[in-house]
Length: 593
Image (cartoon, rainbow, N blue to C red; front, top):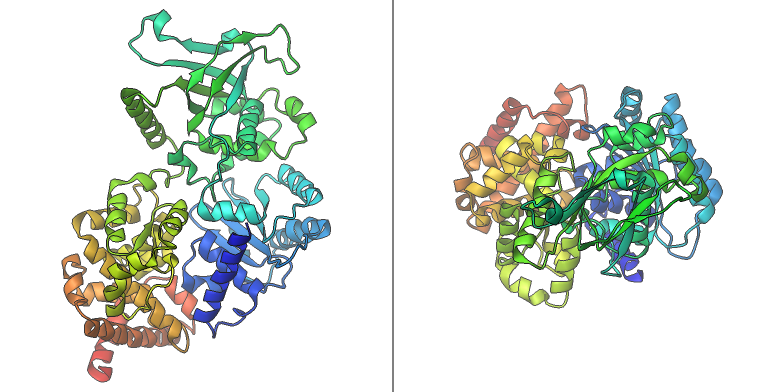
């Protein structure tokens, strides 16, 4: 764990070295907010600074807004370098109440954007606020956790959580460290009649597998997930587990379970959960049980392949309820389990397993990012980029696997990428992270090239949403061009970023605007076949950087004059005025260059 804490400190040091003129960056606790927005929320570097509020605010250190899902994340941190502990008073008053109370009263003055968004959407059914506190040690405070549980039970639209260092590490890498590979769990039901057996032998069906449909209490599902967490067992199939990190809770499911009157209807509202296991045991009937569940059976090594948000939401609600009250509070709340027994070692059943995972998740409203990691085009590009010395991160855990693979073999990557980095005026790599390429960032750059800089800024949340316009634009681009062109375009963006950081104002060139202009002009109306020719040597790269540094500087000045002194951040959140942009480019070419 100390290694991860050290990694955070090293990342912060890099921020401080790369952004020496950024106000407050030399204060580690402020820079930790930068780290959170960059590493955990994937915010664009150009927008991070404005989302960090005075770190001594005591109510909110930073925030993130997701307009499409009507969600706000209120972030606080305790950047401890020692064994300090958060206090119960801090959690009860500052973390849970201070900021929310101000926002509810309309009196929060630190951010007009945040207050306006809260006021606009607070009355809507799909609005939610996530209060998240990040603590850089593992000094767990039980009394503070109890206050968080009570708060969550009494505030259906608010979800509070404390992330200790181990939790931050799991979220960063997108995976829970597994300890045991085998587990047996008990599935409960009311009686034999509430368990439907699909037995191929007795019914003479063609199916090669045994299966059961089970009417089971949500308390049993909660315990199944809780026990798997405690034992370090990977309950979620690897295809869906990667993406449970930030948004694994469904707001409607969560609200239904919190509502004492609605939770009894949960079975009717929910599509159920699909579990694949190695073995389904025999049903055991009991004459009487404490919770009126008189039939049960064991299953070995279950994998949840559909219903991850249902399971996560059940867990997030019930974990806040005192254990002695669980049975009573949720005695009438049930969910349907579909349990399938499959031997994944057999080739035909292994194929069936993979297809069940695929079809169950493609036909239901699981997080759209679920199958991004398995998209053929992305994995192909990942493999080809690695052959050129660059590491595409399709899922969070790729960071860990690439680090383990190359941390002691940097020379292998250097031999592959040195000349290309030199051509683009980029620093020689020193560690694997220097050549990481986040998939979401790559798709933004492609969208900037094909659809414009505004789309890259404004629609970032759509980049990994299956079948969204932005996702489809990027996938089509990838399918129709070469990995060489994709990499050259990405490195042009990285060079623009570097030049921006080195510039006096740290704002020019505007990277996505540069990609936009490059696509329109140097690539003759967004012709991807022109990319490599336009970037064939260092001289051409330097000319493009110089050109669009001047163009975007003049554009921003003119934008402020014509837009009643609206600032840089307002500019990049709004559509580009191409008539004005083109005019600035003509001016630079005729006067400056």
